Length: 190
Image 1 (cartoon, rainbow, N blue to C red):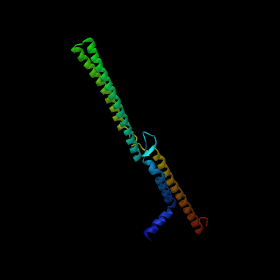
Image 2 (tube, one colour):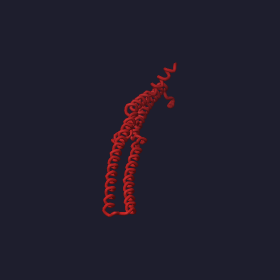
Image 3 (cartoon, rainbow, N blue to C red):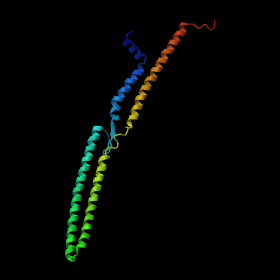
Image 4 (cartoon, rainbow, N blue to C red):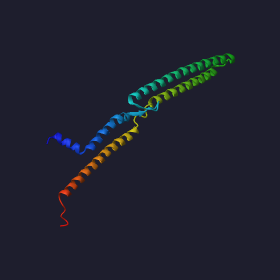
C-alpha cells in the first residue's frame, strides 16, 4: 500500500474534518485576512489598510502644515502691525512729552515684551502642530475586533466538521457491532 493510498484512506476516514478545514481556510482567505490587516482611520473613522492609512496620514500632515504656515503668516502680519504701531506710539510720545532716555528704555522694554509674547504664541502653535504630527497614527497597533468573529467562525466550522465526522464514525462502529452480533449468536442462554 503506497503513501498516496494511505493519505487518501486517512482523508476518507476523516472526510468531514477535511471538508471543514477546507471551508475554514476559504473563510479565512475570503473574509478574514483583509479584515485583520485594517485599522480605524483617525481622520475618517473608517477601517482602512496600511497603505491607505499612510496616504491619509500624509494628507493630514500636509493639511496641518498648510494651516501652520497660514497661522505663521497671520502671526507675522500681526507682529508687524504691533511693531509698527508700537514704534509710532513711541515716536509720538517722545515728541509730545519730550521724554528722556529712561522713558525710551522703558518703552523699548515694553516693546520687547510684546514681541516676546507674540513669539511665545507662535512657539505654542508650532508645538501644537508638532504634537498633532506625531499623534496621527495612535490606532495602528490596535487589534482588529473583527478578528475575533472571524476566528470564532473558523473554529465553529472546524468543530462542526469534527463533530459530523465523529457521528459518522460512531454510526459505522455501531453497524459493525450489529453485524458481529448477527454473525456470532449469543451463547449465554445455553
